[in-house]
Image (cartoon, rainbow, N blue to C red; front, side):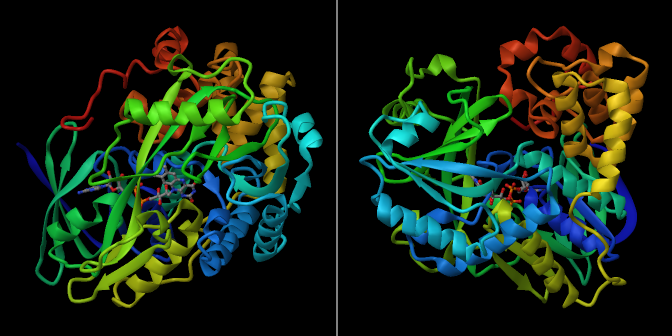
Length: 514
Ligand SMILES: Cc1cc2nc3c(=O)[nH]c(=O)nc-3n(C[C@H](O)[C@H](O)[C@H](O)COP(=O)(O)OP(=O)(O)OC[C@H]3O[C@@H](n4cnc5c(N)ncnc54)[C@H](O)[C@@H]3O)c2cc1C
């Protein structure tokens, strides 16, 4: 097995390329630190590609009286909505008040109003619809039930794409970010000597760093052990499954119900498809296994709670998502009684003697706070040369967007399909999308949507393959772009044009990774 040495002494090595690793990399490098990030699979290939894609204040935590958490999450949501007017969009949640709902319409209206107030009135005001009106606006609801509408936000392009945005920022500020690079050895002698193994070649590369951020989500304990630190916090893991099915309702809203266990579940938009979920099952280890019981449970809830012309069956499943929520369960010695009620707050622990910071738990919605808190913790180590952080998050200005749209329209034209492509190009790439427009300028085929109904053209696929550290077909289809979420594996296999574009990567597979 070959070995090589990277001679740079990094200020911080971040282990884990999910949302928490990515925001930490963006925040620290924007403040002038020399940052290395190691991710053993592809970026965001674990929990951060399996969420419900919601940027939300956590309305359901009002039921467990976690007002402080809801206030904090609402503030984080509002900040993200303000800074990402395209990548994050406000969306209505229409909740059907049926027999499994834990409250009636009056208490429900009171709760959603309280949520709106705690959220600083930042979204549209909640509304109550009586039964007749509820069936009119959402014919797929069971007739005779009232509905409540409140507002939160979602990531139309998938959670993993949002993670990539932070990594792209970190790279812009000079971070070295490596996917398929697993931390396998670590020794501290005043500085960290790290060994990472490449998942394709098995080559081992040595790195040196002054400090470490352990942002390995559900694997925090394993990596702590490797680093020789004993954190106070302990994680318990809860599996959550989503199924993607053909679009089952027409409006551009999220539909909300309560499942037979009294937990909220949703029908969420996923491109031109619907995503249903989620489950909440305690598991002992990280898993991506969707069991027949998970599928059966989700399909049963939807068929019970919706007035569908034809009930959904397993044959309708286009794709699946499965991840584990890393939930902080108090101290390493503490026992957990009701794990369903475990808080979704994150905890950041520091081991100053070894200069290790560990991030436990958290939500995508709270990612900017995680970035700031990791920064504050690293600052205490007094390493590296600091400067005031430059723009480490947020979209470019509206003026830039408008000038992009002018150029893109000249090239793509103004059909409905072209408009969808142009708006999604800006949303996913900002002004980097100008390079995609230039690629497409002289080539009609590269301007065409890769699948009818999706705003993704051949030029975008080529650009992403070339510029976004794509190493396997799944990196592109599942994470940089939401293709494998909205189209089945058979549809993808049969798409000759897409397969031609992917021919360079589709044969690669990392050793030892699923
Ligand atoms: C079903 C479900 C629904 C959710 N819905 C929402 C939602 O709607 N909104 C919201 O805000 N939050 C939601 N969450 C929570 C959110 O997704 C997670 O809190 C977040 O993604 C955790 O990110 P992370 O970076 O901590 O972990 P991860 O994304 O798991 O990243 C950790 C990374 O560390 C890597 N790693 C591990 N060991 C090593 C090693 N030795 N070397 C290198 N790399 C290593 C792993 O490969 C992994 O990619 C949901 C979670 C689930 C499971």
